[in-house]
Length: 132
Image 1 (cartoon, helix red, strand yellow):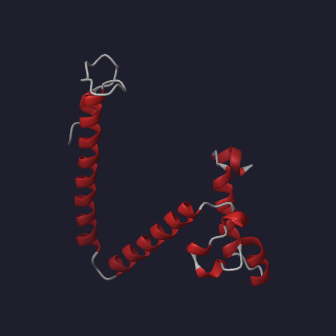
Image 2 (spheres, helix red, strand yellow):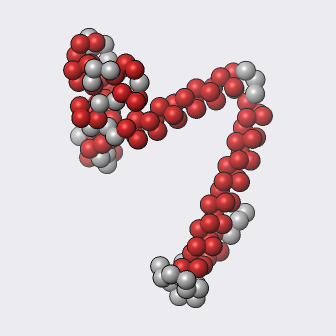
């Protein structure tokens, strides 16, 4: 039901199942059976054969959870305004860099060809990449 309602992939469902088992009150013996012998050691020990959750996905989640915990600690330490201002600045720099890369490559490649210049006939407005 959830898969259809939220358009979840099979990997999404496996990740939800894995997290449910991790947070459950099931005995350690059952968790080891379902998640792998070393599940308590962290993401590097995620048994892909048992959970069907790719290592790269589990690693991504763990890294972002750690970053969120750091952000909460910094905000609790009274550095909210300083941190948010710096994050906005860095986001703007990264966004403009991405736009610049896309714009330069889009203009060079035209409608997917190599080394052609954009003639504007592809229906895509190149100004969408303009900074600002």
